[in-house]
Length: 458
Image (cartoon, rainbow, N blue to C red; front, side):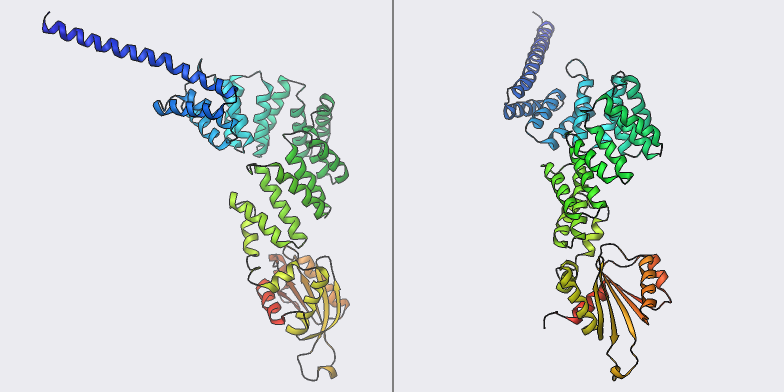
């Protein structure tokens, strides 16, 4: 045999050997991948994770293995890791016989919605409306997510498409009703909600939307009942509890509201839901209103850890950061109403050098009148009465309160007025007070005043 023939035979042999290796690997690999869902089904999720990682270690682009690894992570209650795997599949996989795109996107979209990634979930539902255009649920979910993003025009279009495909889609009718209510189309709103409840009285999420409408109409009794029914639906339960608590807030029933918000927080064992941030924020408001500032700070700190830009949490923490350093201010904000009267009286007498003539507790704080004792022979002088009003509400003092204070000064024949607020004053309030016989004392000066007056103890 010539040398050329020998080389040709060798090359052919190498090619055949390589082909055999490829065929064997191709035959074995799917079998290994197919073993993963079987392990998951048997509850052997740790074994499934181990096998999936072995396959991915040898072939990082095996997105079927990535997909099953994500499913195993979900069974292990590790949604953050599952989302990473699903995201890899979403960005790289070639969908086909081994991985059905429609089934994958349905799973992925539900996962994203559950763990508060609405924008990504919306992208998948929009794709699903094209992959499965006769499925009303996909259009409903897309509309629902647009509604959450305040894109009401787009939301209404998708929701109406959902009820065109399935006229008996109760959730879509209910949400259309809510959107009509927001645009003050009350007749259509009531009509859609009634359709939803008639179609499916056991679809308790519809009562959530009914409750929202009743709450906005200030019918708090009816709203509370609707939100109680809505809690029977697992998907709306947390939101319904929060809304139930918000009704108590509107009625200034802080203790009842706080109980609801704590229940809503306790439902989220993994502390991942976006709604939990709102529950904590409202719970902090209840604590702030009821003078439990330490507990309010705890909730604001929990929110700040997850989202540093959530509402005015950063400002709240900054506002109350001095509490630990200044015991007098802490007492001012957190003490009982009886102790608060003593603190205010002590400040007027010791720091402001006024003899207290009257002292009266108010819902917002304390109101006193006094006579200046700083001048020698003050007893023989004509008494000039001043008005002192101490506020410890969490909101800035507005101009209407300053107008009211001036009216009271006229009634009591006061020559001067002093307002003290731990939360400051609105711009309109400051502007209105300019040039008038009333002084606005902010938190910094209030702290100094309380420190100067010292303890209320004899």
